[in-house]
Length: 309
Length: 309
Image 1 (spheres, each protein chain N blue to C red):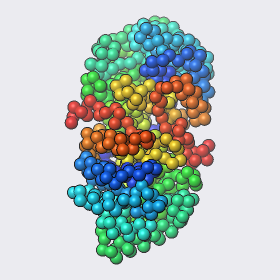
Image 2: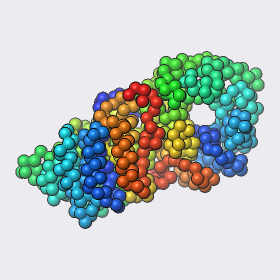
Image 3: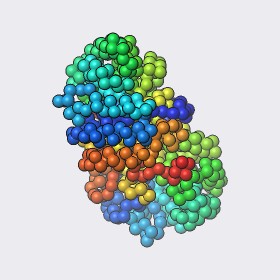
Image 4: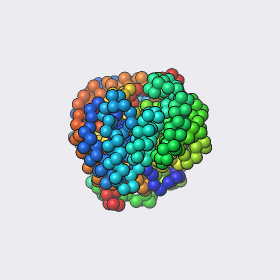
């Protein structure tokens, strides 16, 4: 096994991808505490929320306030999800460092979820890029290409269509693109093949892997993507988020387990276990009653790692 | 990623490694039904029990009866765990196809668990080999080398010591050897490195990988071992077994999730999901109240795989 990079970024998306799929709304004060503690634990990239209409996702209605706070923390890359131009304008106004625009490679899922075809979303990206540049903003535009490994509505998604869209979003002005398996359909072989091919198109602009652990392959898929050269991975503290298509099933890969994977292999994430697990305990208390995931919090670090620390 | 083998064996150890760590005793009739259904689901290698004194593990006291039944099922490799020469003699008498002898590479763990040093266990293997040959038995002798990646008592275990013991057990007459991480300390990099090195010593006689999912890396470790050429993996249906050092934490990698991993990658295991999940449901009912693990049973197969089937 080659070791493509001695350090990686585990990007925290619990406040966005996690909380958006939990019905209750976490008070803003707790979110601010979460962001502060996550930064103190060494997290340097956090997706704090979404600029979507509050009637659709009331849980994330305080995103602008969270961005404003996150911007005060040194060295923190603050990102937000934006569904469209209007959201992008809010992101630019908020001062966020990065906006993540979801694009579903599955035509059926794109229509069902965003009410637009993938190519209409590509056109949105061009408009967002123009708006960003016109505003003199340096907010990065990253496209998160979901259903890249299959779709619960459409079934198979042709890898050639995914790759065509990777090229299209870069041509439209996206700064970066990531591949996402939000439904837990990917396996390590699919991940290796698609990321290798996407890298030949996007080079270093292929900048993120987003996996869900719905069928237990999340960490193995992260490994496969890392072996192709990817160094940035989305994850949720305590694996919050779940899977809307499989009640009780796990959602995003779990931050603390991912940090453990890399730390054990001698790959730096900059994150501190003790603080991370303390924050996890706090979040578990705030979300009392929700199904949480992950293994490290229960098993603790191996004696071998504690000795090394 | 290379694809070292188009088919693999997922060896069921739930009846032994799983049940031995659960306090209640499953009635023999249910175990027989389990073995019959597992065989019908396509499992062709099952560890049915242990020849240990019944006062130590009353849950496994019916092992001889289980072997006798398993031997009636066509094409099934029936294996048992044996702790010593006396157990080996019982295994030979039972007609089992394979006996698994545990050897702990950690000196401290070996003393605590087996009350013998690793080298004393090596001497046992020579005696067991002599007894097997004297009996004219064809029962294979496989050594399961545990704590190969670290130990909860001793901490670090020197890989050179593991490799020395691999050579020693083969010299003593073992037919095969496998490396085991029963405490969940291994990561994919450690797995790659140690299996590569062990293969240079043992060649095809390095024949099994046994991982626990204590810290979420079980499946990723299986992938890493498979990439070095290993084609035989231990697993427990429903991930039963747990981890004695971390209450509630997962134990062995879960059979149905492992079968899913390989099936998704186009690697044949010969196991049928529908029958496997039906058996899982049955076992879950029999073990009502025990902590079970695994993800596939909840999430179901991806639409893409159902279409392909």
